[in-house]
Image 1 (cartoon, rainbow over the protein chains, first blue to last red):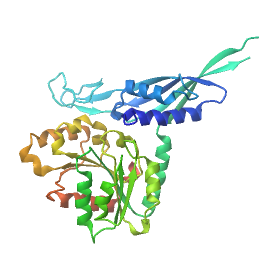
Image 2 (image 1 turned 90 degrees about the vertical axis):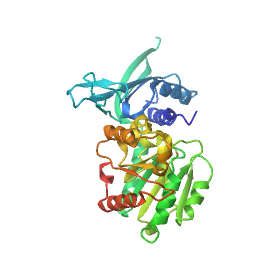
Image 3 (image 1 turned 60 degrees about the horizontal axis):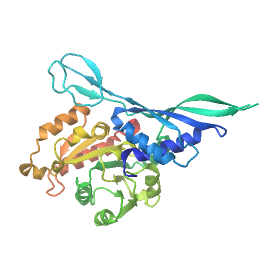
Image 4 (image 1 turned 90 degrees about the horizontal axis):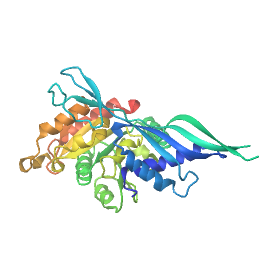
Amino acid sequence: MRGVHEFSIAEALVAQVQRHAPPSGRVREVEICVGALRGLEPDALRMSWEAVTHGTSIDGAILHVDLRPWTITCSSCGRTWTSPVPFVACACGDPAPRPTAGDELDLVSLTVETEED
Amino acid sequence: MAEAARTTRIPLVERVLEANDEVAAANRAQLERRGIFSVDLIGAPGSGKTALLEATLRALRGRRQPAVLVGDLATRRDGDRLARWCDQVVQISTGQGCHLEANQVRDALAEIDLDAVDLLFIENVGNLICPVGFDLGQSAKVGLFSTAEGEDKAAKHPYLVEAADLILLNKVDLLPYLAFDRSFFEADVRLLNPRVPILGVSATTGEGLEAWLAWLERAARSGLPASTD
């Protein structure tokens, strides 16, 4: 399991969430944003997240992954669009438009439940 | 009166690997202060990372004072191979970890006499995916592919290709025996990273080694591209 690409990311994320979680609250949701360049699979991330959080103070927290797609730019016709995969042909016939993507991997928000009187 | 639960969304924008990145920045500052150019060598298992370093260290004898950190899941075999050509080799056993992290490099650097070093090679764990996202504090990332892996390996590993400062294609001596179209490989690399140099080498025959050594010398002199990483 540790060999899975997403596992070490999930481990780093758990430590980070625990650092930010207020001591009195319970973390319900965690939102991250991932650039397509990272090559992370949201399902594998969520599976790793469940395994790593199990039995910890944030067990049960739901991980939301906002996966940012590739941007494809065609130099032949000037069209720009987004795609989940980098190597695609353009409708104009150009077989190899240029793929670009970000490598962001950011913790965006925590949703925390606290008890009040 | 019963207690009510209140739900609050706390916005944050923080890199997930910030803890690693901070250690990497300290590694980079330490190496830059000493004028040590460092290469993070990333390639698949069997692509020839250790063989390339053996040939490189052999060629650099008397010209440079290199040190090598070598990451591996298990065994000290790579470290032992490299120690034949270099006095300062530290083997980092990552256990089950599929990549090196900045704190492992920091600890390994503490075992090296950095005053006697002007060039550092970091042989990452054989893996084309995980190592790319973990900054170690290196000056340059070198992506090593080999002809035996197939011509589509670059396209299947866009993060490494995009992040690399140099792409090496090893085992070019095998090209006559393989269905590997070098122009397909290079076209995929160019789409993802239009400016990256691509050099063909053979760690076995020594073909292309001088161009790789010349790139190293040039990059080390110009300090490329540590400050922009």
